[in-house]
Length: 487
Image (cartoon, rainbow, N blue to C red; front, side, top):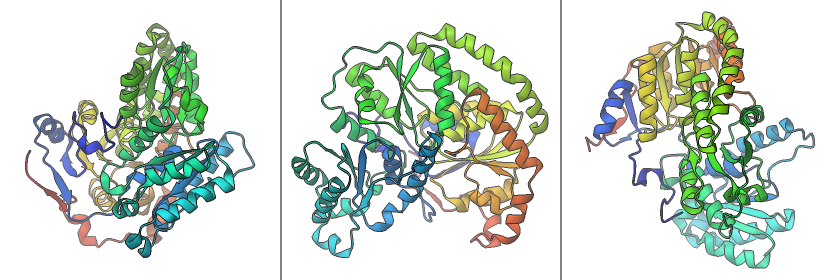
């Protein structure tokens, strides 16, 4: 896989990837094909998400596995959220004897930066085996271990000889390698290809089996709904990697085809599976809202030879939910919305807003590349021009835009919007459903309820303060983006 793609999204040969941009969505759609967006950087940044968290979260729920984070203690802070999601997932799947993920941190310090941290890594790997005797040990690198130059692969191979019944899998997710946090997913899949699938052959294809790659932000309710939808047209799922297992991973080459729930989650991995095993894949958009669920399902059905069944199912499902959607449309039509989240969910939710007759006025997304160009063009056709902020988090830009645009509702991670008193709802939530036709109704009800009952967030805004001066809210939200000129 490394020959084709090294895990750094900015260096993909077939597309430019932008992380720092702000302005008109119509202008962005016009400039991108002409290579005129221009490279940029920020002179001030706040709240960045790095690769390591995505690598950790993608694999943390793997069965019979332990995890070693080769980093200073602070880098493993992200594991607390991942562990919470792991525990929630256990509960939703019927387990009441909840356990924490098996995570060890090497706790690199100043001495290790000078003398190296390989000795600590050896001790951590041996301790992981002594405590848990797992089938897999995943080793996550960090900026510190990368800068030191620790040979994580060599140490892992050396310790693996002591415990041959356990497979030790290094994952190179040093945060400094890429500003695109989705590169962390790629690092995890590159490691799976190199270490777990290395001896697997295509074998006999299992008819009707689909590799369904899903990020950890997909709730169990959503998993069941997507599996139900696909089951209606005769497709079974090999759901990977959340709550997966080594056996499910090794079954990947035998699938008839592959798809991903999130547009940016496993796109590079699916290309590699096609190259290695000849497995076709569907790569469309996240199935949020009726329009996008149509598009996603028909993409899968086409490569699985199930188009006729899919079209019949779509007609039945749309007929069933349309009266409920129409009722919600009467409550939400004309309301303005600002959306933020991961790249896949953000653009899918933009089309969702049109299902209810809402108007998209602003959006914040981590990246912009040729895959996103199609989505921006679609949203421009649905909503007209809107403010587009290409940013890996950057809450200071988000609150500036929210103050200026004053949307009727905010969709995304609501921490900052709630402090401004804006009605808000979550679309990046492992605890609630968001995908498919039926969950469209749930989302619409949530959005309508927030707009009609905004008292809670308004009360929060009276007491919760934001760390910005009032002068910032009237300033240019993109003033810290330094353009390097046109390409």
